[in-house]
Structure formats: structure tokens, C-alpha cells
Image (tube, rainbow, N blue to C red; front, side):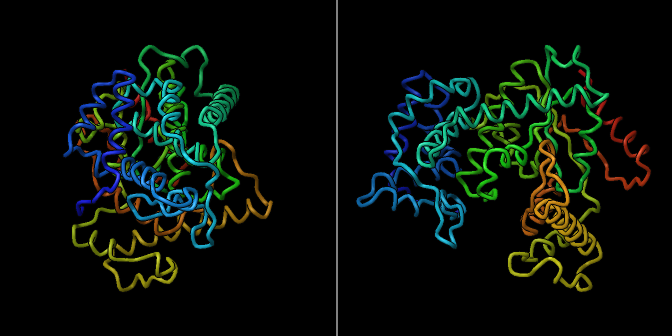
Length: 394
């Protein structure tokens, strides 16, 4: 990655140093003081820096914020940037944001990344007009309703053993269609905290739109809920594709950089094997297909290597199935399941997750679930149940 030039590097660092000094967080100070820290390559810092830059630049601050972008050059506060729709209601107040950190002091016991991400989330709620505490409370009610529903309707759940002294954070790793949902149904007494569900719950009025501000606030809520329920003795299924090692390292610490170190959870990684194995040349061929410019149903799979063609068929079928189901929900033919929310993800994003799913986690404690096509429902459940029991062994 090319080295970035930061116009407001000093001012942004100064804000983080104020947090470290005010709340006595040495691990944060150590990361911020290291000018070669991984922090300065990460989206969390780049978003924060560019918001600071927009806020300190001359001119109309609210107008400046429209130009603030993330690591991937996407406007942070867009709802639909092509149509010029942004969610920018207020200027940020960095000093108030620093004081507000005390209301979320649980992050001080996590890693520096979590602390900085909480600060960014506070600032983004200032600008977008949301209240971080209200987002969390809305998510907490959703999870509470899910627990009540599961105790009433799921025979695998038992109120007597729901809370334990050694709760587990279960992190599935695998693309859509890999077996994660089937596996989860065989887990006993494990809360499903899904970013899809939380994102839809909090931001359905915006699409959801998958813009940086929305992703930051949705994932912050997921992580806050995860921390709260684990600390109260509940095991948690961290429901997402989680296929990018760097993207999940703020929780898993697979990258042992000081930015990520300090997460206190008992973690188990569950890797779901892709349907076929690809050689490096085949993976390169898959990555070369651009589904942003070519619709998935227009890709000529006859020109592809057989294994790559199989993967493309999987992506197409997954996308088409989701498209059909979301259209049925939109047209009122089916109801949205509030505990298993479904909405359309671009085929190009589905493909990206599939590509990433070929990177097998190196963690020695990872449990690998082999890909098996089992048509019989009872046999399929029994297969996943064996692995579910293995995961929950203390």
C-alpha cells in the first residue's frame, strides 16, 4: 500500500493522545506514539483523520464533510453519493466526544483499536444525528427478544445452562452458502449477534446503504453487544462472513500487532471450507472477473477453468436466490424474519467474500468444517451437530 500523506496527522494524533492521557490508557498512548504503527494504515484512522481535516479546513464545515472519504475512497457520510444524498446534520465537537468516551469505558479494557473505533463512532453520531447509547439499547432489546424467542421455540436452548462462567465467542469464517446458518442452528444456548440483523434494525430507512458511517455504527453496535453479553456469561455467535484476516483481527488478534492485542475473550474460530479447492492460477482467474462491470448472469463460464466455473455458478445461484427472496419480501409475498434478516448484497461483494474464503486461518485453535453436500436434512443436521458439540467443549 502506498504511503499516505496526512495533512492533519498532528491534530488527529493529539485527539487520541488526549483520550489516552485523560483516561490513563498506556496501551493506546504507546500505539499512537509509534509513528510506524499499523494504526496509520487502517481505515479507522484514515476516516478519523479526514473528518478532522474537513472540520478544520476553511469554509462551510458541513459542505467540507461531504468530501471526507475512507481508505477505499468512498465518501464517509454518503447515503447515495451518485445522487448527492448525504447524512450530515451537525458539526463534530471533538472535545465533547473525548468526554463522551467515559460513557463507553468498557472499551478501555479491550484493545487500542476498539478505543479508537469507539471515538470514531461517537464523532460519526454527532455528525449524522444519531445517539450511540440509543443505537446500543435498540440492539440490546433485539438480542433480548431473540433470547426469549429461542428459549420458547428452540429445543436446543435451556435457561438453566444459558449463562456460564466461561462463555465462548464463536467466529465463523466462510462465504455465503458455506453452511454457517445450518451450523448455527445446531448450537445450544449461543446468542446470534448478526451485523446483517443489527444493520437492518438500525438503518433500514436508508436501505441499508452500506456507506462507511453506517458500517462503522452497525459494527460498533455489534461489538458493544458482543462485549456486554460475553461479560454477562453468554456465549456469542459473531455472525458474519469474517473472511478477511485483517478485518477480523480487531476481535481475533490473528495479527498480533499491539493495535489489536488485549481482547480478553475465549475465542473459537470455525472455518467453513469452500465447495472446491482452487490453485493459485485459478484463484487469480477468479479475481480477474469484474462483477461491477459485468453482471453475474452475463459471465461466460464456458471460458473459465472448470473449478472457477463452479465457483461462479455458486455466486450466481446465491445472488439470484437472494434477489428472488428479497423481491418477495418487498412485494409483500413473504415477511422479513427479524432474527434472520435478508437483503440483497451486490454480486461483486459476494464474490469478494468467496475469494477471501480461500485463505485458511493459521490459528492453531481453528476448527475446520469440511464442505459436504448432504441432501438429507437429518443427516446434514447430524453432521453439523458433531462440530457444534466440539466447539462448545470447554
